[in-house]
Structure formats: structure tokens, C-alpha cells
Length: 398
Ligand code: AMP
Image 1 (tube, rainbow, N blue to C red):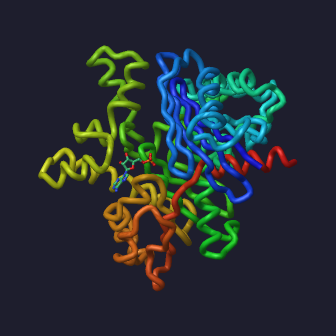
Image 2: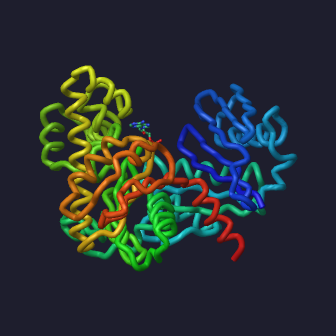
């Protein structure tokens, strides 16, 4: 059985075709500049590549290009899209409505559309992609929605509420929803599996550190707290995002510089974080290289981000009254040994002990704590696409 996984943005579309017999990726690719011009890059698992510039005025033409790449191009992997059993969509915002993955019917599509108010950069694009799939593949092809927020739906009320006047929660649903839930669920599950314990009996902290970053406290097998909030801007410093800061700093800057809410949103999401502080790049590798050359702001950005990560981990130890295991994932979490060492060495008071040799390993599933460590620390590479494909299969098999 083959599952087609879609991660759609407003002008881009990432996809994977996964064979669920062995959970192997058959092909993956990316359509870019949808609505502007259009280009596809498609890679088959055996290394064959197909790329083309082709007009993509809407997501429908992008899916047609994907079908061509999968079934007819030099890098084809199937004869027909009929071989694909279902389509699984990554959906950023499921609000308080979606507690888990679901089949996309008219009501679900309408709800995802309405939740666009809470995720204006993402949900409208997901709706476009779902509608384009119906147009391209027909209504009979099952489509499943897998939400970034649903794993976080178990947070208790006192954890997800903001200390704003209650009416804004009642009127607009303003509260913490979290993000990266599919990754935190996948990684914490896998962590429990490799340790050989039931996740329900563990206190786990998962650190998803990539261009977007979030940390989650998983207690009794469920999300207890997570660093991202109303939107994926909250938490700690990321590639281009601020993370948490005093809101009055923003109202102050807005007044001084005569900025609109949209301007502030743009600055906080796109011009801040590691990029904003360092002035070098949003990519930690470039910033680390600049810091090596003596660039103070680059070093400052690295120091700030590490410190904020440590504070979140420490706060979740407090929130859960302990921690059994910590997992690092995402581009930074899987590759940046220095960051992992910094965090772990500052948790020595908990009995965390890192194996400095193992900690040099990159991007592989590995235990990086010593056998004496009171807390198990692992690198667990995330695989959100596989998690989406598994959920999609589970939903259509019901
Ligand atoms: P992701 O969003 O999970 O793909 O992660 C992307 C980020 O991972 C990049 O922006 C880099 O900052 C970071 N990254 C990748 N490789 C390394 C590395 N070797 N050391 C530090 N950061 C890395």
C-alpha cells in the first residue's frame, strides 16, 4: 500500500510517496513558486532526479506536475496514481476542534478553512491543496488531515491559557495550541521504544530544534506543555523568530517606528531570532562559522539561543517534577553536539552525564548519555512524513 504525503504552503508543496509495506520512501520532491511561475524537483529513492520549470498558476497544476514526475518522467516510480491508496496532509492548525487525525470530508475541510483565522500563513494554503487534490485525483481518493496541534490537545487548561482578559479566549479562541506535534509525538514514542519502556510511565522532554524550534514536556504518554503558543512564534529564539519576549517591547517599537500589527508580525517571524541578533544568517552553521572568526553578535546569538533552550528544558523538569529521558531532534538537535553538550552539562544537578564521544555522532539514532547518567539522553531523528503516512494508513484502515 502506498501513501502520498503532502506538506503544502501557499507557494510551495513538499511531498513524499511512501510504501507502507516497508515504510520506505519511493520518491520525494518539491514544487516551488506556485502562483508565480512554477518549478518541480523530484527525486526517486534510487537517485534518479527529474526537474522542470512548468507553469503552476494554482496548486492543481503543481499536483499534475507531481503526477507526471511520479508516473511518466525519467524518475518515475509508479505506473499510475491509482496505485496510491490515500493522501495524507500536514495541517498546521487544528485549533480545539481536532484532537487527532481524521478523514477529510466537507465538514472537516470547512473547519480547517475557518481555523485559518488562527493560522493565516498556513491553513488557507492547506485548503487550496486539499481542493486541488480533489480536482486532480477525484473525490474518491481518501484524504487524511494530520494536525501539528493535535498532540498538544491534552495540555491542561491552566497550562494552555494566557493571562489575558478571559473574553479574548471566549471570543477568538486565543490560547496556546503548540506546533510540531507530529514530530514530538513521533520522537517521544520512538524514544520510549528504544529505551524499552511504556511512554505512559515516563517523563520525557523532546527538543525539536530546526529552523523552527519547540520543546515539549510529555508526561504519562501525553503532551503536558509545549513551548510554542498561539502561533509557532512563541517559545524561544529560532532561525528568524523571536520566541517569547515582553509584549511591551513590541508596542514600544510599533509606536516609535509607526508600525502596523502586520509589520510587527513580519519582523517577529521573519527578521528576528538568530538572523536578527547575529545579522549574519538564520542558519546556525553560518552563524557558528562567523562566531569562530570573532563576530561578537554571532556568538551572542548562539549564546542566547542555547541559554533559552536550557531554560525551557529546566522549566519542564520542574513542571513534571522530574525527567526520565530527553531527546534532541531537528537539523540543529541532530547535528549540533556543542549545543547538546551545553544543555546536558548544565543539567548535571539532575545526574545528567553526557558521553562526549557518542555526542559527536550526527543525525543518527543514538544514546548520548553515559550508562551512569540518571537521565537517558538520545538523538532521535524525526520523521514527520512517516508519522503522517502512518496516521493516514490507520485512518483509512478503520
Ligand atoms: P530543519 O529545519 O530541521 O531542517 O533544520 C535546519 C537547521 O538545522 C539549519 O538552519 C541549520 O541551522 C541547522 N543545522 C543543520 N546542520 C547543522 C550542523 N551541523 N550544526 C548546526 N546546525 C545545523
